[in-house]
Image (spheres, helix red, strand yellow):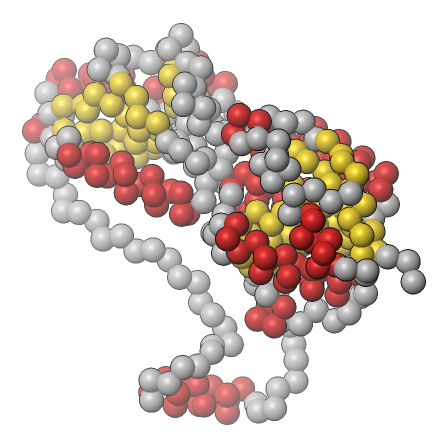
Amino acid sequence: MAKFKVVHYINQFYAGIGGEEKADHMPEAIKGAVGPGLAFQAAFGEQAEIVATIVCGDSFYNENMEKARETILGMVKQCSPDLFVAGPAFNAGRYGVACGDIASSVQNSLGVKALSGMYLENPGVDLYKKSIYLIETKNSAVDMRNAIKKMVSLGLKLLKSEEILTPQEEGYLKRGFRKNYFADKRGSHRAIDMLIQKMKKDPFTTEFAMPTFDRVNPNPAIKDMSQTKIAIVTSGGIVPKGNPDHIESSSASKYGKYDISKFRDLTDQDHETAHGGYDPTFANLDSDRVIPVDVLRDMEKEGRIGELFNFFYATTGNGTSVANAKAFAAEIAKDLISNDVQAVILTST
């Protein structure tokens, strides 16, 4: 029996090309397995062969999505694979978005079965979990061996058109689909059983898990704005001209802190947006549209606020992982408190 043919997609880092400095690497097809593909090949054994590895820089894919997608689809089509595997991306946001987008595109456009692997909080999960199977991984590459094992197992099932069981049994992330099945007990009996287990404080598994949301208790209202020191924080991507910290246009891995002590008004000569999730035209013409430095300076002069903090903090919110956002927030909050800032205006897009 002939081996199944597999094409594997990875980013510039896992291909050994480089880190962030090579994130603009253009799509490239390499014969055979590369990087983590070698472990995939070992796990597939004699059942499947990685005939090609496609490499693309995370920034290039996310900033040139249509071009990258079209180019890679052409490369995949030439290989005529039976399965397309992307990643795993773990908690790398841009990598996750790229893996999800190209895998779903290969499946939808070429009719090739596809899957990837990601951490639950990767922004690619919400975008693509309904399009393709995503094996659940931990948040870093320390889980590579386990992730590959589960991805290969599910991939072989897809190749052989075998029944795909539940997320708990196969290890993929829940896709939001509900499937009817015949249970041993009717619903009323199962509900009573769960209620008794809950009352006895025994562990039980609900059949309909509810979403969980962070809840943040609001601080007391500010009594006197004329005595208040205010700072600006934005996920709208406003940065000094040239984006000196190279904040990513999506799936940000960093934020910036920028001095506005000498600015009463932001112009297209000194500030711009790095955000890739909205039309930047008007923000680039006047960044005050995203962070209202001009209005706050007027209010400061008029005595309506006590003081505008001389620095603002910026990142890009689109596609940024929850874990990264929480980490940014913790660091920014600590810095704000140490500078006696009493209130924050948080702007988005």
